[in-house]
Image 1: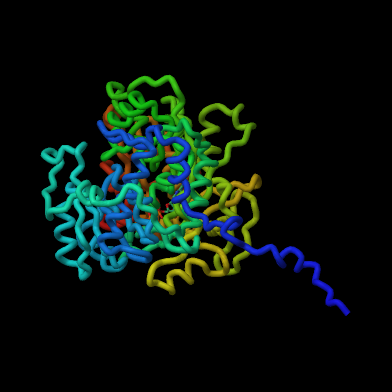
Image 2 (image 1 turned 60 degrees about the horizontal axis):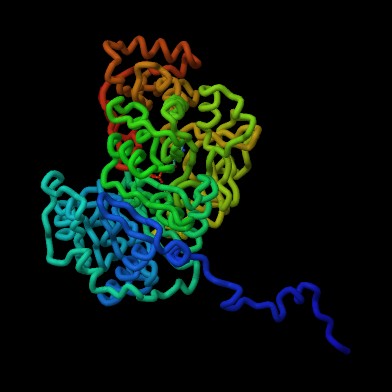
Length: 551
Ligand code: ADP
């Protein structure tokens, strides 16, 4: 008797994967395609330099070829220490073309931490901009690995002003000149292969090495294209560091749609407004403090532009007052949320048509929520981290924001315990405390370690900051816990005033808060002065907590 074929088999038998119908996902295919479709179009602008897509692709292939000649191959780590300039962008393609792994380093890190990252990641090559020669020299003297040093001598940098000496005798331009512009790199064998290594900022202890894969980078770049509505006429200004989550994967997303990358060594308001005018910038990204810098720039540097500039903000909660100030200045804000572990933006505050009718301020308030998943992400949930049960969608109950999807890190390099802990219960634990609104939008209330517990009540530092930012004389604010004999802790506000604020007393600020929120949440201590920040624009609350403790 003839054996019956199980019904499900008909979908598998004779229908296998082959190289025609199954290709591993990788962002490298974006460059191949854009170089073929738009060879003559400007891909990269940097000062006086212009590279077409054909030239950009050729430079990336030269880099890959030069690295291959230097003995670099699959699985090797190549570290890069550079601001947002063409070599950093090229590294995002030239290094993975070999199956090697890019480790983009934070340019503000100290030599010890850079040395730690080089050793931990096992860097075989270090491509470093001259500006950071002092750090590079010290880091190389300390670390155990002995990477080949390739120095970037940027023709558009004024090293006489910014400093930086040459440490060796091999420049980046010499190095890639020895590479073949027609080099064909190996495509990743497996889309799960590592593509980049990104260290977290390591505010407590050594940084953790977050490993991305080709598939996740491909999907996140396409997620960026959808949530930020990118199209081939996009002129993208590099105000977000490329070393931060690979520039939230916009290093790949802008190339994917054949847009133009506009490089920027340093984020200064005047330079940003000049680039908007000169190059017709349409999109940029930045932490809320970058938005604040632009919204409150002196009128003399604010050039007039007659098109809408789209700005995606995230990395920290944008107070609604900052969103409103940007919109008044002709920018359209999209709010995104994510972590290094999620390749940058994993959720965003998706626009609802009904909000078109709202006045600016209430609209800014709904937009300040962290929102819903980006298209290529699978799911979010706000849940109790112990029971893993979702909290009710009441906009009140606090739980941990958890994420799941195809664009989460492979894990932390050489740290299986931390990886297992992060993925506990089949969800990624963000460490952020949030509420879930009835419309499915999540709203972060605090990082777990930033929440203030006063008289047994939770006080969200973000909620207090939100009110402070609405005070007309406040430029920036951060709220942390200060030990308190009676209440355990109380909110302590650090405030930077606007230049034209005149004299303001702590009592005036406290009264403003009491009038605009539950009294027990109002700060009891107010300190005026500048706020310490990281290079990615986050206010360093751990430093402020120390100051508050010692007041
Ligand atoms: P690091 O942990 O080194 O500061 P990350 O970029 O990974 O760098 O930081 C991620 C954290 O930043 C999140 O866990 C969250 O606390 C905060 N964050 C990012 N985006 C937002 C946002 N839109 N709103 C509030 N917090 C945010």
